[in-house]
Length: 110
Image: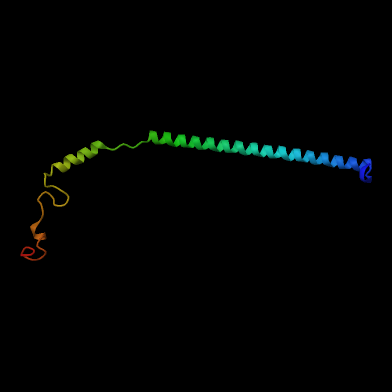
């Protein structure tokens, strides 16, 4: 035998190598199972995300908001009854002249 090793030594080395190969095979199959599990989890997460988005969009379509054009038209008609000078700034009677004098009886600059 080479290096003075006996058959029993070579047999022990061979069984150790085959055991290491078997352990490596178990490790690689465990790694493959882990990868498969991770891929399945990622696919389920993506499917759940798509389902949630579709549900949200369907809910938005069902509960869409529309402007109340009838109420806006009614408000316009009521404000039109105040006349042409009926604005929010002056009111229907126009500007009060006593508020323009600033406490004096003469015009500004006069």
